[in-house]
Structures are given as structure tokens and as C-alpha cells.
Image 1 (tube, rainbow, N blue to C red):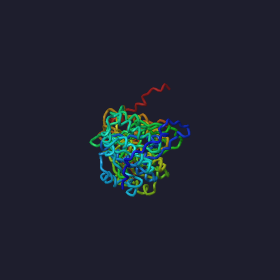
Image 2 (image 1 turned 60 degrees about the vertical axis):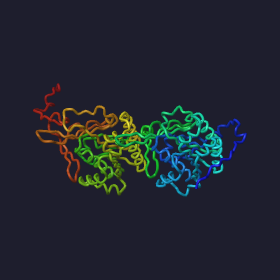
Image 3 (image 1 turned 45 degrees about the vertical axis):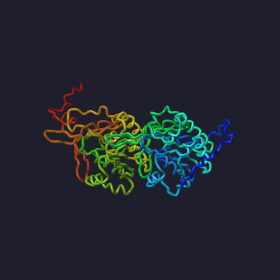
Length: 515
């Protein structure tokens, strides 16, 4: 099943040891796909053949899975990988641990994926070990050589400089065969950036495991890549039964904001409400619906999507509070048939529990669905939860700016809910909320206590590109109908604070117009 390494010296021909110059055409190296979703994009276009790639990370970060996923992807192209291990994991365990993953192909073991062990040869003579690896790679016509567990392999070399020389010599010799060398090493690349062996690598990938809220988040970072423009920053990745999937950091993949402007409107299908906003929201804009729980923000979002489906516009609901079954039941109560819209392909529910929320992953899933299904209406419930899924609160402003810019470029009209912390009170402030800066429209749904009775009050506080009715309205939420504008709010001051005081007289009548 495994190809044994030849220990016979295989001296490099004298002509190969000469300094060789190449012209521009000969110097162009071919790129190949890693087979890891979105990793090639993060790398700036895949990996170059004949280069040295180092993947560094702590135990359990996914180094071996990443290496094997690349190897089996090469096997699917009928390319051979020579996979060499140190003492970190036996071949039997290596195969057993990866057999359940979908990329694993048992028939490739012993043919396209050749397993071998390096420590015994290194213990005898590092020079002979290097020659044995080269000879075996040449005889197999290997496209890849992967060294898994280089930390244990380094133990057979005198010092860091010797390790760097070993990697450089092995990588340079393999490069002449068109073979890429991938080195998996346990550690932290940021602590070892001055290590000599890192300096000889063409690509350095750093894997991280960050503890957050009792769980952890895996991230990948491109520290170095020659000949490409990688995406900067920390990009989350997840390991599932399909292997490793990378989700590029949203800020690094937003296209230029070049969405065409249109005079079209996206209404809610509620005539009295649409009249307040000049017929509907401006297409391609983002709207915040702010209010405390129980004010009908989610119901209004479902009505927005239902109206889009009626007009033949595909919609997406991204929710982090209620699951799909709860949303369907809620919608049914208010006369909205989500199941029919889902079956017709006009609506999709994307529900993710808040305890498993990663903002970059959600943004990428939204992006995939928008581009695959040509979604034109999006509801995010809620933006408060989405921001909580960021790996750093400092990213909130740039993340929301990037999300808004992307949605605008795709001509998507977005409705986002956001929580207001107090049910009633004299203060109503959105200070410090980055959503307010980038959302073109702002709706407020709030309770107001008038003469001992609670009323629901609806207000349009902002529309950046349209005139709107500034009068406050009372609304109800009724079974079979959903949200319904009941009429003007009673004359009172302080309605938006939730603590209204009836007016003794009409203040507008006391204004001296000078006429």
C-alpha cells in the first residue's frame, strides 16, 4: 500500500548544479487548485507548482486534514502525492481518522497517494534521506511531496539552520521536477517568524484556534505568498464531514460599490404603510427596523418577503433567533404561507442558532445564496445577533459597511431588525451603533403609554433618498393579517419615548406665521 523510500544515493547531475538563467516565458509557473473551498481565493489564485509551502498551527487546528484534502484533490486529477510522516501519527491512525471524510478515496492509497516514513532514514543520514525522497518522487512522477509532522523530523537535524538547509535543498531539487513541497509543522508561526526554515518557504499559512464564549473559532491567515496577492486578515474556516472549508473575511472580498441606481420601490404590501414611505423602500437600500421584542419586527420582515414573492422577486430570510419550523408557524398565524413560497423557489430560510454564529460565515452563506438564486429581497433577523458573531467588536463598523456595500452592488433591498434596549423611557439613542451610519432608512416600532393604555407606535425616522410621512401612526398585529396601520397617533408629546403626555392644545396653532 505504501511506497518505500529508496535509501540509495541519487546524485544530482552536474549540469543541474550549474547556475541556470531562464527567460520570461520559461519563468512562468503553473498554478494548481488545492481542492479546499475558497482557499485558492484567499491565496490569490491557488498554489504554484515547484514551490515550498509551510502550514503552521497548534495541535488540533486542522493541519493534517488540510494536507490530506490537498493530496486527495490532486489524486482526483490523477496526480501522485508522496505523503511522508514523522512520529506524530502512524499510517494506520492517519487513514482511520480520515476515512470518514468525503474527500477520502480508499482506492487512491498505494497509487495516487503513497505513504512513507522519514525519521528512520533521517536518523541514518539527512543527506541520504533527502536523496531518497527525491529519487522516490522522481520514480513516482509525484506532483506533491507532503511532510507531515516536521517538528518531529526537525529533531533529527542538528539545529534550526540545518533544518532550513534541508528544506531549501529538498524544495529546490523537487522544484526541478515540477514537484511542490508542502510542510506541516506544529507551532505558532507568529512566534517563529524569524526561524530560518520559514525564510526559505514561498508560502506560509498559519492556522489558529481562538477560544470564544466557551467554544472556539478556527482561522487561517496567509503570512507570506510569493507571486500572488492574497486576501489579508484572519479568515474563519470550519471542519465538517466534507473536510475543511474557508470563509473569506467579508471586508477582503467586497467588490467596488457600483450598483446601478433605480427609481423602483420595494413595498411591504401594506397599503397604509407603503403610503408613509412614498410607495415603498428604495430598491438597493438597507433598512433598520428598531424596536423591543414583541413589536412585530420579524412579522413585518416576513410580510416584506411575501410581497416580494408575490411580485416575482426571490427572497432570503437569514434568522438567528427562531428556527425554520417556528418561523413557518408564526407566518401561518398571520396569513403568510412560507412553505408554498419555499416550494415555489421564491423564498429561502437560512436559520443559524446564535450559539453557533460566526458573522463571516453568515455573510459568505448569504453571498452564495444571493448570487446562486438572484435574490432581490433580504431580511436579517437580527443585525444585533449578527454583530455579536464578530471575532472582534472593533470590526463592527467596517463589517457592516462592507455588507451594505455588497448588498447594494447586487441590487438587493435589505430589511434588518435591531433591538432597542428599553421598552419605554425618556431616552431613545442609537449612538455608537454602526448600523445607523450605513442604513439608508430607519423605522421605529415602539410601545407608548397613553392615558394608562399601551399602544404600538410606528414611525419613519429616516429615508436618505426619499421623502416620507413624518406623522406617527398607531398599528396593530392581527391574526390572519399581520402588521396593520390603524390610524394616526393621538395628539401627545413624548410618544417616541414611550411615555406620552396628552397635548392641552394644538401647538401648531400657536405658531405666529406672520400672515
